Image 1: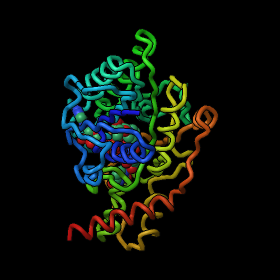
Image 2 (image 1 turned 90 degrees about the vertical axis):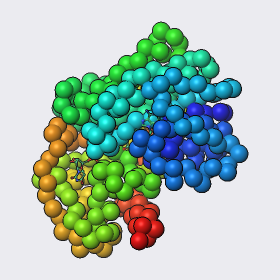
Image 3 (image 1 turned 180 degrees about the horizontal axis):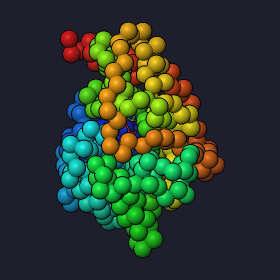
Image 4 (image 1 turned 135 degrees about the horizontal axis):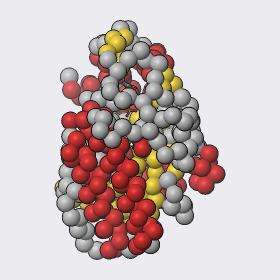
Amino acid sequence: MRVVVTGGAGFLGSHLCDRLLARGDEVVCIDNFATGDRSNIAHLSEHRGFSLVEHDVSNQVDVDGAVDAVLHFASPASPADYLAMPIQTLKVGALGTHNSLGLAKAKQARFLLASTSEVYGDPLVHPQAESYWGNVNPVGPRGVYDEAKRFAEAITTAYFRYHGSDTRIVRIFNTYGPRMRPGDGRVVSNFIVAALSGEPVTVYGDGTQTRSFCYVDDQISGILALLESAEHAPVNIGSPEEFTVSELAQIVLEVTGSSSPLQHRPLPVDDPRRRRPDTARAREVLGWHPLVTLREGIERTAEYFKSQIAGWS
Ligand code: NAD
Ligand code: UDP
């Protein structure tokens, strides 16, 4: 297959490029480096099957030649990033998704949208099944991301219904691993970098809010299984194991052997209280379930950040 990956220089996108190339696909990565990093794809620059197009997909997207699949991953994903880039986030979720769907339609290619658990907002139903419509504040600070992704799901579904496009929607729950930016502001990278640097581990609020953390290799396996499936409705991909933020801090401190103190900071506005995917559909439709435990994944991610920190000094 010849696959276009928008946002291919980001955390998930670069792992996706790796896995597609490893299975023999050709990859065209389109990225404007808004939140991505050239170092994530530097090792691919000499790969025969890989090419990079530096482009903002909120503007028309053109790719020469045949394309078999378009995987739309371009978007800031960390709350710190999308709060700093609210308009760009809305544009890439709306216009960027429209342009990427247009490319897939023109090439008669399969299309996969990277959606998010944030479409459930601060959920009133727990765990979150795909049938839940969510509880989103459109005018709260997180609305720029949540509503962009909800629009992206709606337009993807409209292309499926009205143009007969061959679409997939993955609702990704908190995923972590090597190649997260050390300063991207998400909890796993913040905690590990702080622990390794001997800085305070910043727990927002009282730390009782929960998330369910999926290791990147498991996430990519789920995404590829969905791409190969015939499933057009949204599918949750994430870990069904739920942890409080305080529990995560404890695991990070244990794994890194750090004596960093915990420091409580104010809880961000509209921060979801609880989040855990119902993964029954992923299991039934894709036969997918995650393999890497949180402790194991944190160990691997801490090794990665250790090597990065060694590089900085
Ligand atoms: P990331 O910030 O590391 O990667 C996003 C990539 O998109 C970056 O390389 C960035 O430069 C690129 N990009 C942003 N705007 C662009 C534009 N207008 N044109 C071209 N490229 C652009 O984030 P990530 O964690 O890898 O997330 C990738 C996708 O997965 C996003 O769509 C995100 O919403 C979704 N997602 C991720 C998670 C997670 O836990 N990592 C959870 C839910 C959804
Ligand atoms: N969080 C935290 N300390 C940090 C960063 C985040 O306590 O340094 C909390 C945040 O308030 C949220 C959870 O960790 O409750 C996950 O935050 P993240 O930004 O990783 O992703 P979200 O799931 O909120 O999109």
